[in-house]
Image (cartoon, rainbow, N blue to C red; front, side, top):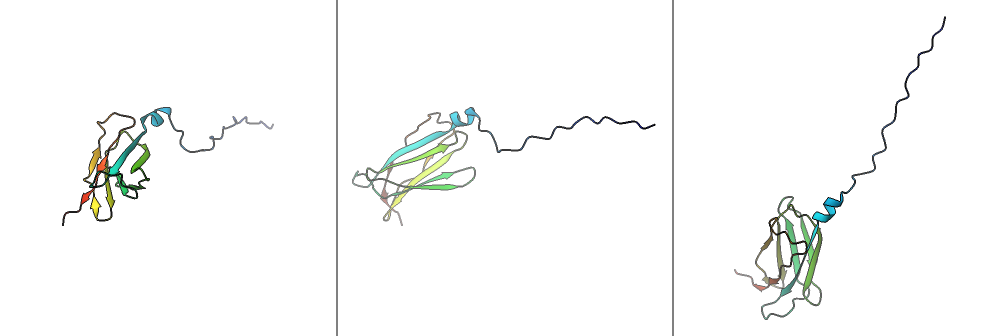
Length: 117
């Protein structure tokens, strides 16, 4: 006598399609903007603004536009960032965008001064 064994059909796991972004993650993202001025208080076109993530130490750069403006988007609200500008032998002081700054679109303006030797 032959008997058949019934084996329940196993479901295959779904194909992994990457992380799904939560709307909460997008709402936590913020942007940093500002204007770089030179020693004479003119807009500093062509200044290199560097943004440093103090957690990962990753540095992003932006070259200021004709009006001296810069912008960084998609920043985490859970990380401190340091921002500074350089242009032709001048530099700004380093400023910090803190996790305690709850603004979604903070503005940090930078002033270039001759580099100290």
